[in-house]
Image 1 (cartoon, helix red, strand yellow):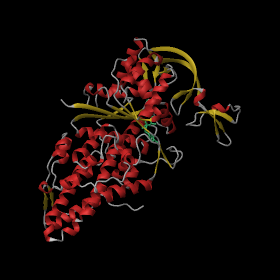
Image 2: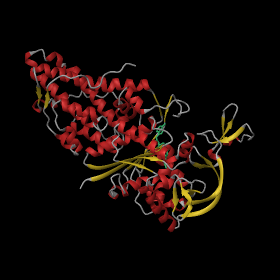
Image 3: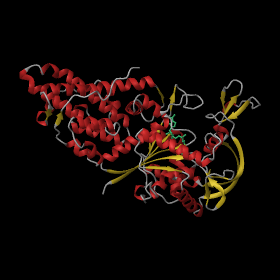
Image 4: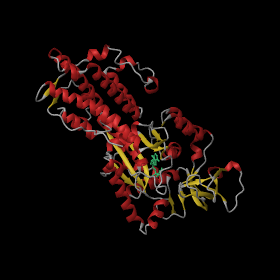
Length: 557
Ligand code: ME8
């Protein structure tokens, strides 16, 4: 019986179409889903849209549309983006769907009956942009004339010109006084801390987890889960005059798709989720509210939450009004999807804020895919065809393995290795296939996609150096060196094969095409049938019939 792997993207709002920031989360999820798919696991990969929100209602009315036709249109647009980007999700769910309403009402009922949900009339400030309640300390002062902002601790005098606003949306929060239902989060403080202790990898990266723990240790407050004024959404089963909003409504999506999959099947075996991918803005909700809500409704807790960071465009928050939003479809149409994936995943660690740069994306693509990988592949092909006229077979009898294992000068690292690999890996052993594959496996399992890409491209650098040193384009001209040339070419080809297997989850189309063209038949099929390890271990024979056009052409800036 295969293990299951269930990965989820964040729940995207539908008041706009996905921009490059959303694509980033989806591409990470997709690459991890694909890796697990080829590694002997049954994979479920869900993506969704967060529809029952005030933002969606506002947007629909702005467009003079009824809410449901608006949401249908937006869900279609979201799906089209993911399909275009070849994000291979298995489930797509909308929060307005019946299967979801049913589950949310069930869990609300359970928590209400066990005393975790209670009624309270209260007055609070609410920011529509954030869809969350605010306290004084969450706000800043804004000078309406100069647009300067000051910290609330500055104790500025409020007047008509100086107002208190949400720091993200620069708008005064609404004051709301109404009857709400609250979730007893305070009751879960100790249980959460115990859970964190027992699951030290629950939130990755560790800094973010430390912040979450510190927040919980300071004491938790109950939070509102319903609104009296909203009419659009899931009605509370115990008080139909109220609808639940954001937390129960959005988060329980993750469970709904397991209870009833897209194909209408019960796939409860996929719960608990192996991995939620969210950005730092919503980590508290996922790492604190969500486990408490699950405990209250007797569900198991997710295993891992990966927190991504913000990225900006021209150092500004991505926003339609600033005109700096990048459409991932347009961007990949202009260049290609591989360029987008490579740039997003190889340039920055997942837990780092950074600025998106089009020219940097092109430079990365040219250096890594067009030059490093593409040129080396071409060199091997051209020489292989020269070596024997029509078709050329490289078999493993000519693996130059001794050279690779013993020659230390070639494998000397000029990179700061400690920064890249874990301590117990010595560079001297790196040159073995098993070590490379172990590094790749560990990096995937540690959710460190940048390392997978870094290791692969470092290897390619060294292979290029190896080629430069062995000069097969020279030795091929000397009759007595034909065998040596063959050995060198086979060694490079075999290494390339190992690196392509590591890169497959990121660039499945291109890698499959390379496999096909080198006579490595059925690779795509074998990978789809979980045979990654078999392919890694295989003694391969390459059959090269023709030279073809470069797969990764250089792009001019
Ligand atoms: O927050 N940089 O939806 P959303 C990096 N529905 N990632 C970004 C990004 C950026 N500039 N912009 C967006 C929501 N993302 C709510 C969640 S949870 C109860 C409700 C990514 O559409 C990021 O992963 O505003 C974020 O989590 C996701 O898009 C959803 O953003």
